[in-house]
Length: 315
Image (tube, rainbow, N blue to C red):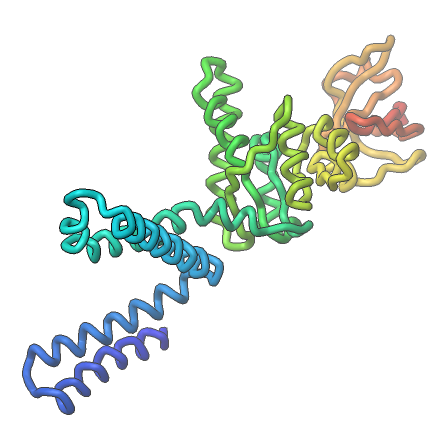
């Protein structure tokens, strides 16, 4: 790691310069070493911090100073009894405290401030169904969802509520959604932001769509209702279920395949089988072949909003 060579060289250089050009004793050398450590720490800090965080911290510093100026003006202008003497003693300490408070408060709220500063289609608002499903992680790992994944606080709160539910199935879904949100934040391939902005709406789906519209963002979902609400609000919805359907292998009428007949169908003598991707195949005269693998020939396809069905007959 060459960067550490330069950092160690900086520490040695500061100690050497102070020892040779200021005063040749151990206290001066220790002071030079401390100065070098401050320089190295500053370099590491500024490397880790993004420019927007530095700007937010400077804004907090300015707000803290403005608050001190207003407080100083009020005490001096109105001359409260006994306050003048106390202020002359503690004014400097109050100023430092307000400056530190402004910086810490702005950094603490920096995620929310950053989220509000972003707009554009590079933002992807993840709704509750996409987090519970989990395939959003796979899409992010292969860079199929570029940009910034935005996790609304009201979605995370709903997942927390589900995770503490008495219903085992709902509790499992809530915990899975929280695990997926945590794993998204650990990914190096994408950037994840959390926003506290909560639009007013009657349902969770409408809140997600309104949030996306306010950010000019896109919605990542598996919910058909979110799709419909997004169309009404002129918001782009990226439905993972639609993507999975579009990527299913193409089967054309007349093709033959080997299929395992699992159960009987709704109509007389029908059998039901499934492809590897979960597509249901309805086989005529397949009931007598339940529990067997047979060769079938495709003669019809039916595409519905819930998926695709294939109709075949025994070859």
